[in-house]
View 1 (cartoon, one colour):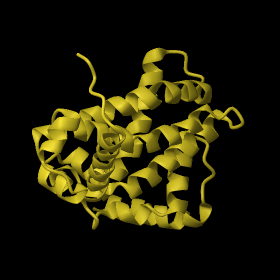
View 2 (spheres, rainbow, N blue to C red):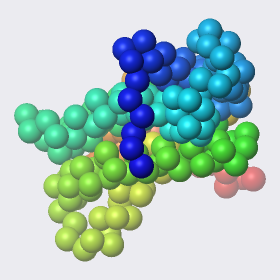
View 3 (cartoon, rainbow, N blue to C red):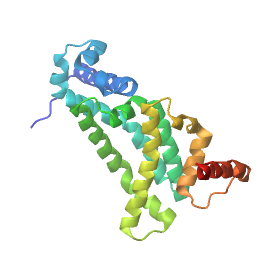
View 4 (cartoon, rainbow, N blue to C red):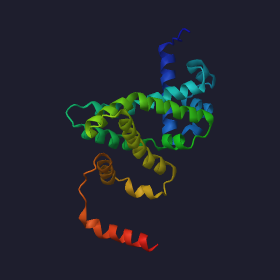
Length: 220
């Protein structure tokens, strides 16, 4: 099938629709990215979406790819040969946390899709994440851990992805969650250090606090 070609004006309209859709997704989530809302803000006829993209789903996919350019930028940390593998992975994870804080609505929609369409877009996101980062993270994990068993490497990569996504999704869906007390930059940095290093220096000032928790748990 031959791809449509547009005039300069048409390309500008198409780009504008993508940018507006991406902003609605970031700020309000998939449920708010309706055809009416998008075209009203773009000041175009609702038929423009079908004309330029074929369907709303294709526009959503284009907007999501546009948003994921930020992810592509942070994935560059994983290739920085000036850093150790642990430093590369730490910078990537911290940048990913920052990306999630800038686009909370995306992660709300990911964990609680408003429709089958939104759920489908979630899988587009996962595929982009996998394509851009999975292999690079795997290579860095091998360098950090020294693992030689491919199964062990994949388990470690899954563990890292799970540890990163869990606090993001929890915070995005419940602002009153306990997780919010752990999302300041200093705590997140500590969190990543603990995730990537089994030989973390213990803060002995908190030993008394830990003992108290253990004591209370035993009493219960």
